[in-house]
Image (cartoon, one colour):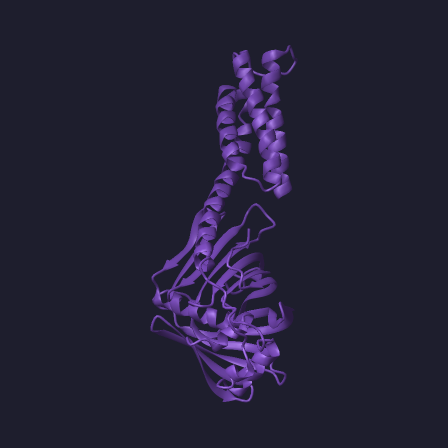
Length: 366
């Protein structure tokens, strides 16, 4: 659809040459005599040039929409002046205007999340003062000690910030269709916080942008269709807050040295599982990590509110680990599926893959 829209810009722009030619040259074009003066004909030429400039900017992901607004505005005025012959050009202008509004909304959204991301990790100083030693993990449950060794934590310094890239598929409701997404995520591991920024169905000009944020014990969810139309906007909701904390707890498997931090406590369950408790701003959540005999994480489960509505109740929320990969000497889960275990049946709503991860880099992706 991106290519189709780019072609539309070129074709729609090229049609404006007819007005220019009618004003400056003798033609057989069966157009209404609009009193096309040479000054009006010049405007048709300018509009052609504007659309010819917009199309390559769009196709190369440059900032194209300000120029598109100008082109559409001038174009529509000219179409109204030549309504009998040019009225169908209004359809193209409406399509271009709607996509331009979406692009403008996306630009504002991306600017907002870029600033939020920078605030989250920019001032975090990497802790390179000392390596994590064997003696530092001996107070943990034995299964967690084994996981820490197997993950490559021993000999590394503490992780203070994380930035990563994901791709995958998600469903917005049970029985819904899978939608592809890409995302970037940033973590502050000194003061538990994250921001997750996703683009859903990003192979099309029709898409949804999402941002989940957790900081200082508070969570925010924002989803915008076409980057402009709010679909979900949640904040100041204790159920959403606790869900974001549980998400942070589950995702610590990507930066395992955080298991040593004071805001996380552990309780042994058996030889293959342990309960983790995360405490932030006097609020606590917990979840159970389960491992195989080699010390590889198999799953994480917790009871999480299924939505933020007043009637929402806790349901079993399960993360299944599908594969592992080594990044910067850390062996971490890089593929997983996330399932709500509901009374009506399992709702596998998310499958994701980590495709890139950086530790202790205090700057967002460019």
